[in-house]
Every structure is written in C-alpha cells, then in structure tokens.
Image 1 (cartoon, rainbow over the protein chains, first blue to last red):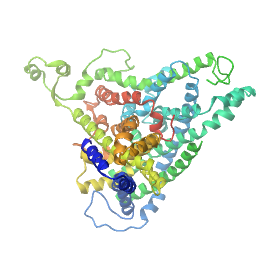
Image 2: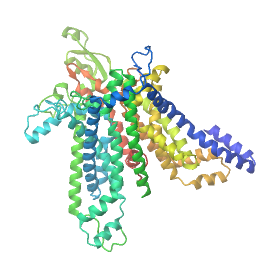
Image 3: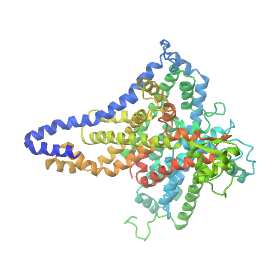
Image 4: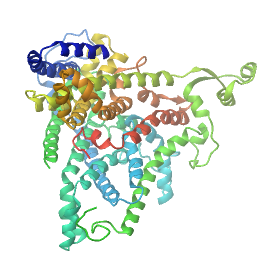
Length: 317
Length: 318
C-alpha cells in the first residue's frame, strides 16, 4: 500500500495539470470497470456458469455417479415428469404450508413485539439485543439442538408442555408424528426468525413521525383508530419487506429442517430443497434434479423481482 | 420529543402503566426465547446420564465430561488394562476412566473448528475486498445498466443453495476443488460478495463526494483519494459488512455438507455427527454447540447498531 501511494504521489507530482486531468478523466472509466470486473467475473464463474450448466444438464440423462455413460438428450422429459410427479407436488405443498404458517406467526408476533418495544420502557435496548440472538445462529446447529429439546422422553419441550397441560410427556412425538412434525419445524423457525421481522417492523414504527400521532390526538382519534389508520398503514411497507425476505428464505429452507427431521417422518416435512437434495445427491438423478432446480430458480427469481419492486417503494417514502 | 407539545411529556408518550406492561411482556418473551439456548449451554456441563434423565435436571453437579468427550476419542478397556496405565493424567483422563474407557486421541472438533475459521476469514476478506471496490464504482461513477448489474449481483444470493450445489459439485470434481478450503472460500466469497456490494454501496453513498473532490484538487489521483480518503471514512461500514460475511460463512451448512467430507469440513456439518456409545452424546453436542455459538453472540452484541441494515441488504437504514 505505501509503495503504491508513493508511486501515485510521484506520478501526481510529475504530471502537468492538463494532462493529469485528461488521464484522470480516462482513468475514471477504467477504474470503474477495473473495480467492478473482479466481482462480475467471480459471479459469472461461480453462479452463472453453473446455472447454464444446470440448464444443459436438465435436458440430458446425465447421472453424476455414472460419469462415463453416454449422455443422451431427453428434451423436456424431466420437466414433464416433475410437473406430473405427486412427490414433487407433495414437497411443494409442504413448502407452502411451512412458508405460510411461519410468515403468519412471525409477522403477528414480530409486529406485536416491535409495537411493545416501541413503548420505550426502561431497558428496551438491552432486551431487544437479547431477543435478536436466535436469528444470528447457525440454522444447522439450531436444528440439531432442537432435536434434543424435542426428544419424547427426555426432551425439555415435551416436559414443559406436559408441565402446563398434564399430557404425559412420552405420549406425543413432535418429530416422529405425521401430524406434529410440520408444526415442529414451524415452531423452531418462528423461534429463530421472529426477531428478524420484529427488527424490521420496529424500524417501520420508528419511521412514523410523532407529529402525526399528535395531530390525531388533537383530533380526538381513539387509540384503536390511530392504530388502524396511522400506525399500521405507515409500517406496512416495512412489514411487506420482512414478509418477502422471509418468504424467499423459507422457500429455500434446507439446513434447519434437514437436521431437525431430515424430511421425515415419511416425507411429511420434505420441503422443496430437501426433495431436491435427495434426488440430486442420494438418487443421483442429476438431469431430473437439474430440471427441478431450474423450476425452483424461476420461482425464487419471480419472488426476487417482486421484492425489488417493494424495496423501491420503501425507499421512495 | 416534539417541541410543539406544551406539557412536559409529549401527548403520544405512552403512560407509565402501558410502559410497564410492555416491558413485562417483552422481557417475558426474551426470557422464554433464551430457554433453549440456556438449556443447551447447561447440557454441556452435564454427565451423559444426567443429560437424558427424566424429569429433565435443572439442578445438577457440573461435570467436565461433555467438554472432554468433545475434544477426545475414547475406547472401552478392561479394568485391568486401565489399572495398568498408572494414575490418571488430568481431569479428562479421570472422567474417562470412571466410564471404564481410556482416551485414544484427540477428536476432529479442533481441526473442523480451524477449518471454519480459515474458510470464514478467507472468504470474508475476499468478499469485502471485492465488494468495496465494486461498491465504490457503483456509488461514484456512471455505469451503464448499473441498476441491472446491481440486481444481477443481488439475485445470485436468491438462488437456493442446493440448486447451485449440483453444478458446483460437478465443476469442483473436474477442477480438483472438492473438499478443499480454497473451493469453499471461493464459493462463500461468491455468495457473500452480493451482500458486501449492497451494504458497502449504502455506506459509501453516505460519504460526501466533496471529500474526495477536495483531495483530488490537491493533486491526489482518483485511486489515491479512494485509498486515503474513502476507505478510512468507510471503516465502520467495512467492519460491519465484514462481520455479516463472517457470520454467514461461519453458519453455512448446505454447501459445506455437500461439498466437503473430511479435509475441508467445517464445524456445522461436524457437530451433528458427535455420537457417543448408544446414541447422541448430548453433553458433547452441548459443549460443541456452546463453543461454536459464543463468537456469534459476541458479534451480535457488537453489531446491534448495524443489524437492521445488514439483514435487509441495506434497504432499511436507521
């Protein structure tokens, strides 16, 4: 760095002003591309090239465990298979159930918490930081230790439920039961990500200027009325932002659920990413899973577009 | 508070009672949400029988067994063999011998932890270095199709990791990058660089252009001004961005479990494989989880002012 600086110093000192301006003018554009190029090259190599390869593979019968088999073009066969496959639709339905309920619970609890924290009671900054901790942790490690909490005989979760309800703690299995497992993953995701929604909602609530509430107070609008016609509409873009982020993230959900249930029991919690992993890395149906991956890309990309539009709306405020 | 208000308190200031109720409910939520973490921390200090006792033990005699089991591998031996070894050396040896076992050697936890450190710091350094250059260019220069490029950079982050992992797996197999730290560093850099560009662009946008322009009038070149004026001004933003990148790389599981198996395996895929005799060794899992999560809790506290920005890719700033 210091070598570079001294060279730059000498170059600057030795260059007549007029030429310097010209060189600078030229180099501005050069610098712009020089600065952006490494990022773009890296993304092309690690994201775009593999994406194109995935598209190619999705039209072939390639299997990664049999690399020497002749590769045959199968056309749109995999896409037709996937759209007609009951297992894939079951995994999409499991994903939809998971995304819907996690977003609903996280938005309601998260907004509620943000609303309470916005009362600015003593110590609210400290407790806000405490609440934020779960969302920063590794989802895989979280899934793994919740598996311990959910153990039917020895787990803390079952014990606490039985303590408050009297239901024997070994009479239900959160992870082993077909009806409870989809809720078990929703509970853990809600525990982990409610703080995320809370933090964004809190920013939304704090963006509402005091004078609006003061004006409403002068007009004798009830607290209830103020909430519905001021607080909620003004915080709405922020809530939407949180919902979209959580929607995209949970649509891709893999690690936490993989460690908690592994997709089981049966395939009740086999979310799209887990189904994809099984097809690609356990059944080695590379072509088929590539086609599935492309379908998931398209869905996420669609969500991302919606997200960017909403983001721009938030920014315009 | 508002200057328009004539009373000591603003009219919208919540009453003392509503504050107290809000405080009670928030603290209640915070305490309940900390129970799982407190439990896994406590489990690290239990003996294996205590960790699976019913009813769950809240009060217990702390034991080093979890931490000992985390760092060692052990083999079962006969009483005669153990007695022939002489007096136990150190606390772990003593704990192990009580279970009629001897320490056979170190476990893989430390190498996996070191892999996590190398890969997290390596990828963070690269992502922030690339990110700050791109962010500066996007912030200061007119770039054709800048919005499209920025959206392209962000959209790479939206891809489901498993979908990306299929071709990466094949590509790395061809290039000999499978199960290598370099491969994981490049991959995590690519994932993190999108976050770095978006966050750093926000931070650099906030630095007035006049600073560099003044420096350039004084004879600095553009590059010189970037290194001498902009980078120091952006130091806080760079630090916050770096911590976000570190946390992502530290926590990542999907790529790690699919693309590494031994040499380059990080801690998250390793911790769930800690198994004792007859099932999971929960105290060792508790100990490994505690050590793995502590850095993140510390970072969360350090980052609390910038968290909102980081988690929304700079879309929301306080």
